[in-house]
Every structure is written in structure tokens, then in C-alpha cells.
Length: 232
Ligand SMILES: Nc1ncnc2c1ncn2[C@@H]1O[C@H](COP(=O)(O)OP(=O)(O)OP(=O)(O)O)[C@@H](O)[C@H]1O
Image (cartoon, rainbow, N blue to C red; front, side, top):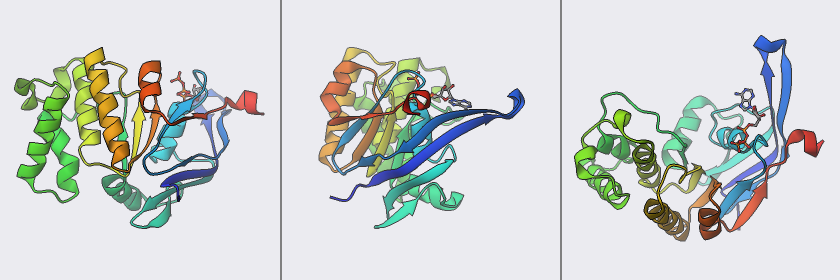
């Protein structure tokens, strides 16, 4: 089966220009391949580069070397070299990302934040709001909060808004950065169910999942991210 997302020889280093140009190699020779319907958990010690790899996969960080190949609109797209407009299009249609923290948009109601990616993909506004509301309910976010901007919400409430926004569209590829870090056991179980349903629908999922119970419940395999000083 063809992977929906793969990297070939991916490398990334940071150069600290304010620190005399200090060069920090973080990723080197990363060959990752994820197939439809599977969940791969990134694995490695703190500081190994798991979050950096996630940000490269989403196009937030430029890469130093290698390619990031995404199946998008039936063809291979190299995210490492794609122009910004194509990256935005790929994010709208193919590649979702649930970061650990919600990037709060001032004055926008929670249900609109969740519905926005659905509307961007062409869903009618009423239908998108209904889907957003249903998902927020499923994640136990009280109805009274749906009309409020999430700036003042608790960490766990904000994480659930983020999860609803990430899961609502049914992206073919979904990146999850610590999706249950701020959640209690009941909500963790709901996230496990959402991940399993997404996999059953054919999504390829890459996650950083420190919680062993969640990881064992959803991950089909681990992918080692090696610290560069160890890999050298
Ligand atoms: N923007 C940046 N500028 C400079 N160095 C960075 C930057 N982002 C990450 N690093 C460095 O890259 C290395 C990898 O960081 P990263 O956050 O990817 O690790 P991680 O495996 O996700 O760690 P953890 O499990 O602790 O979250 C660290 O040494 C970190 O200091």
C-alpha cells in the first residue's frame, strides 16, 4: 500500500544567530512512512526532536535536507519545497494538526473555531455548525461555552476545542501533538475512540503520545526519533 505521508532523508538543524551562530543538529536521515488507517507514535527521549519533526511535517519549520512527500489530490506533493499557497491548500484538504495548545483567535466563538475548517472545505455553514456542536458535546464541552471565545477556558477545555477542530473535517492525514495531555480519564477515553474511528475511516495518524495507556490503545507501531548526538 502507498504511504500517504513519508519522509526521505529528512534533516533539520537550528542555527542560533543571536548565540554566535551556534548550530544545533536535531533531525538527520529520518525515513518515516505512514499508511492509511494506521497510527504511528513518535518515540524518543525528551529533546530528541519529536515536536520538531511534527512541525516539519506540517510545514511550520523549513527542512534542511530531504523530502516530505504527502499524497494530496491524488499526486505526490513535496511539502519541503512546496510554495506557501500549496501548503495552505494541503492543510485545508489533506493534512490536519492538533497542537498541544489552542491558538486562541480573539472574539471568535468556540463553535465557529471548530466549524471554520469545515466551511473552508466547502460545507454549508449550518451543517458545519451542527457538526461542530455535536463534536463539542461528544467531548463534554458544556453548551454554555460553545458561544464564547475560548480565551478564558481551562487547559483541558481548550484542548478539547482544539481536538474538535482537528477531528471535525476527517483529514486523510492527522498529526496529534500530545492530544490528551490536559485531559481527565473520561475525556481521554473519548479521544481514544475518536482516533480509532478516524483510523477505521482510513486516516493516517502520527502522534506524540506520552500517556502509555492512550499510546497502547491507539498506536500500531512506534517510530524512533534518535537524538543526533546519539545517531552520529
Ligand atoms: N526553535 C528552536 N530553536 C532552537 N532550538 C530548538 C528549537 N526548537 C527545538 N529546538 C531544540 O531541538 C531539540 C529537540 O526539541 P523538540 O522539542 O523537538 O524535542 P522533543 O523530542 O519533542 O522533546 P520533549 O519530549 O521534551 O517535548 C531540543 O534540543 C531543542 O532545544
